[in-house]
Length: 422
Image (cartoon, rainbow, N blue to C red; front, side, top):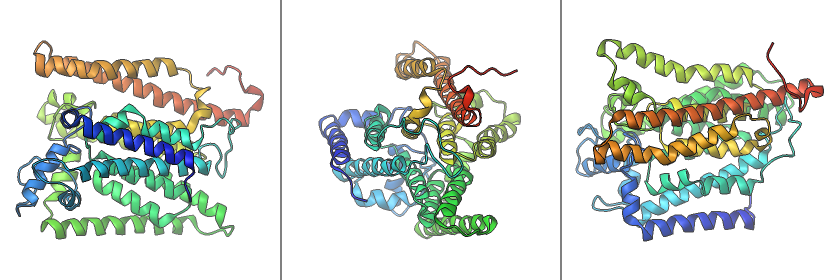
């Protein structure tokens, strides 16, 4: 699909902005690589360079206990960078990935799946942002820009997720499963997006193919494809590293959360204070808390699978073990597809000001704790709780708006009227 001049200009402007910031303020970019809002133990560029240093000297990158990222990232960075300093090629890679993500988001926006699906068409379907605005909101989002400057490897996961959804709305089953396999290989948690993606692909399949093919066979075939791609990626990782040590160092790291480096999530402080005898139980509870939303949202909002994916991305940004602003930028990018729901949301001002408040005070409280020594861990964790509260309100409010939109289709006489639970 050719790209029009307006979208092209937006992508060029955003790419130029990033290139200027990389070139004019290299020390600022290096500073961001160490900020807990941008980098986590599983997405840190500094940790990746440590693993790269060992990999290029024939030592297992996981021997140092610092590197916890997918091994297939190593040959990519080995080609583009040196251990002494980042090269312009690495910066260009991040800029290119952001541009590709913006282009894929325009494809998702233009598909119309946010407002009209096989079983549901919103009564506010004409109230949409243009695909140019959707791409611009992603490219010029400060969180997206900061994550790019901080060289967070979360961008690879985000790219894979966006392209999985983009392929799904186009009905491209094989590309969707490949992209989802890559995202799951890199970060594990995107595998939870499989149910709504299968539902989205099934709807597109039935729209393009009038025959009544078996849904069970369709799901089985795509699940087998996903497993095959995951197996191939894991096999390549084994060939690259020569052992299966990367599995406990990457996926085991995510499941057991041994590194309690502070971040903007909820896990680190909770498990710092946790008695060892209760640790395994609460690890299960926390992971169950992430996974349990998938089934409920997919079943209740089965008419709007793209909105289910959007809501899950917001929940992942709140409840995953090592979240960063890169995860939130992805959620905000998908949320702009739902302008027609904004008028139905009740707490937009409260949630947006809460997020702004936490965004400004978070770095300040971290500085007071770590550098100034005039605060403690409670300072920073308190502001991360406020941050999570703001995101939770936003996700819950958007889910309410989607349900209200569906309800008004069933009860058109109630459109614009107040509804109360009796």
